[in-house]
Image (cartoon, helix red, strand yellow):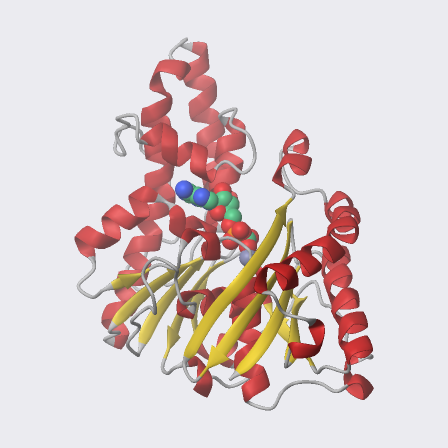
Length: 353
Ligand code: KG4
Ligand code: ZN
């Protein structure tokens, strides 16, 4: 059994979590997250410098809160895991520096974590409501967040993942905007606050017709597993302009939102199901903030021939429990760094794998 502290500051959530790792079980025992959403809302998106400065203020309280809620002392920990790639560089540096200081002072090993490996691991976290998720391999993972849209085919349990698992399992990704970004940009054009995904979802549920407006789907070829969402913004802007001129935009909002949602969800569903079929995958796993979308869930339930697993909502958006879990896997595999190595550890805005 090992006790891991996870730290996540790659974007606009400052989060720490204590997790128990035992065999194939990953059980968060505390999580403390400070979301900066309100700080960035006036700008309609994340402002990197505002994010870094706020992480600097929040990182200590968040870490001590997570330890306090878990009733754990730093001395009890086996290792400290921290996101060091990819993300906003100034934001990452705050988490990495705090983690180094804590690990150095307490003589604990430090485990650098790839943020996307954390998102994949969110699916294995024990849920307070539903317990341990049942994931059979091979499994197709759809990772759809504000920053990424990736399709992975994962062959085995996390304990067996190689350091290159993300690169080795990648079957497709977005060529431009991420799915969450497409939701947020479309929502901004339609006048909703940042982040707009949940507003588009809510407005659509007011009886919106997903087929009301014909919006573009990028990379429609049957065998393509890549995504493209950048054309959607212009189409949404032109549609909104036309409906505004005709004085019907407000009344048409549920239909517009349902059509935008469909234009994003449709390729996510089709390409995930194509990969599932190609690989005869036994489970589909959906992670990242867009996993909260109700239309995506409804369509998967109706169309998937295999079980579809979603992490608890609190683990879909950025959080440190998933980072602690990814760190736990690497620590168990012997990848914890000693001070002589981790003092040189850097953060990377872009990470290949
Ligand atoms: O995983 P996450 O915290 O972001 C990154 O790691 O980048 O996910 C945030 C994204 C935002 O783009 C947000 O609009 C989207 O998830 N989102 C949704 C919903 N809830 C959050 N998108 C569609 N429908 C939702 N219900
Ligand atoms: Zn993320």
